[in-house]
Image (cartoon, rainbow, N blue to C red; front, top):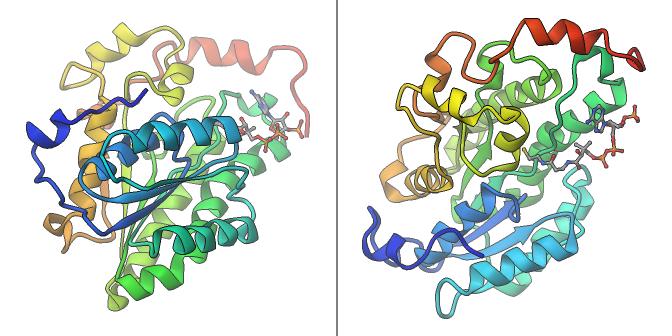
Length: 291
Ligand code: COA
């Protein structure tokens, strides 16, 4: 079921039809954060292409999002792996064929699991870097002609993990640091073509796959460490997305919009509640050391 509804348009901060005639292409579009980014854009007039790996999940997300606005076209593009630029190119061609164009790109596909260094194989590290970083590069590569034609805008879904050290997140932190660097360089190179490139860095967002994994049942403890004293909502990320794609963000590029209630400003972030006691236990646990 969608998270947002018509009240996002009628009682929200944004005007109806803000994105009428625009098309957004979203990798990871069936995921817990990216699907709500899609919901907001569709409610405000855009059509959308939801790109994902699982057929069932991607089809369902596209179908649910399409119910939000009468006449909305929401395309499901399942069985696409962002690690393959050819696979993405097929998804882009299908989007242009069915929806006519691509104006906005959200590179949101991500892989994550918790693993300490001793239990993180070289291949496991590579898998996450390939999905998050190479996948983000491939997404822009496949969409480039449409972005150039339509003076489009890109948002990468990044993180705050790499602003400090976060245990069990070596692979994701390294990948997201790369994503920020990719976005910054694209802003410089593609700016003269009228293409903008920015990151959104979500902090602790409630009811997301990432937060469920990272919080390890300590949501209350984490909430009280957030300067704004609450977890973020998926709508907080959707609002940041609308701002960056809207004309209000038209002079913003090469930026990282951190949406975290001030969390990363707290020493060690808010996620490392039992560090360093737990880390030694994990590093020394059996079956580690795999290359
Ligand atoms: N701890 C340690 N290693 C792990 C692991 C875990 N929890 N989960 C996977 N790995 C390792 C695998 O053992 C494998 O390494 P190996 O070859 O040395 O055994 C490597 O990671 C790749 O696993 P595989 O299942 O082949 O990768 P995949 O490409 O199919 O999947 C993942 C990629 C691992 C990132 C998977 O978690 C995924 O697809 N996630 C998508 C959803 C997601 O995580 N979204 C994030 C939202 S925040």
